[in-house]
Image 1: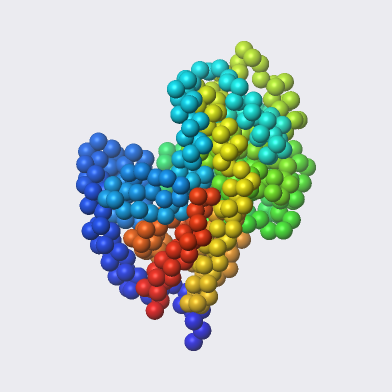
Image 2: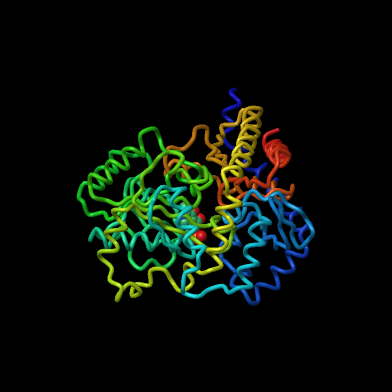
Length: 455
Ligand SMILES: Cc1ncc(COP(=O)(O)O)c(C=O)c1O
């Protein structure tokens, strides 16, 4: 019998293994457990943010402190952090240069609704990195995406947006739509949509050029909002020619192209856009760009910037709330400046990308050793493994391969052995503060977890 037939582990064995890990987790995290119990009386579901209940353990680990690639919890346990705040801490936790610049700025005033000189340095650096000439700031990538969509609608006079099935761009109402049996449907779990996203949005599978072409043929779509590589349903790479086609078809149909580099900034200092000479009309980036201090940016092509300037009057430029009171504040700008100047530098990527390759090679070696029908994908300093023999071509294929129970086990087994993976899928992000020994430790732990299930 081919060992490849072991598509998933024996479910009873998996269930028993998960129970054992949960028991161990409870026993070793008494302080986190006590804090969680106390939190339930003041915080909805015992957490400050609803996603925090979705970790693999029976309660979240409460963090005490962090530095570089590691953090310590309130029970005194130390972890290698391969989640890094789901990219917000891709710089590594509290890089020394950022701490100093942030402390200095806090002591000199945080927010004014007026620019500081740092804003110009940041604008010029963003120009250099991403190739787009004009920039605006927001507090989060979600906001930057929302503002970009509104501007795209305003400029084109078109109502619709197009996204790829199983995308994620923050709480952007238009984006919670997937293809199910080839029909667009609101994503299950989307809470309180103002309107059915099928009204606002067209959706096609990533890498499906004919479907994209057909969807844009009516010339009623203001913009395509896309990650250049999907990262939120696992890493789904574009096939050769996809980006060329995406740009050609969007241009031909008068549709603006927004590339959301919030996660794909892991591909290099100018994101996937610079690494692959892409030409978006609008580019969005958030999360790690200010070492974890809330900040995001969105940039425009020259042509688009001119169209925006010509169509928004000074008298009305504040009416739609594009921006928000805290956007472009002095603290975020100081944090962005130091992050771009001294932390997320080309040298940092020269460290972190080979480390992610080492992670990927380690996972691959175990997959080969156990002849598992699993696969691992790398994008810059990010890597992800899937319980599927071949890499997914699109969001639908990726979603179909998800295995909630197996995910939980792999996450919890890693956590119990001192490694935090990104929740909800099997993603690892590597900061420049990590070491080869950290990656080898992951390989050891990954192997041990696989051994529990398959030996
Ligand atoms: C590609 C992408 N864009 C935007 C966002 C939203 O970022 P934030 O929650 O910081 O607004 C996310 C969050 O995961 C993301 O993955």
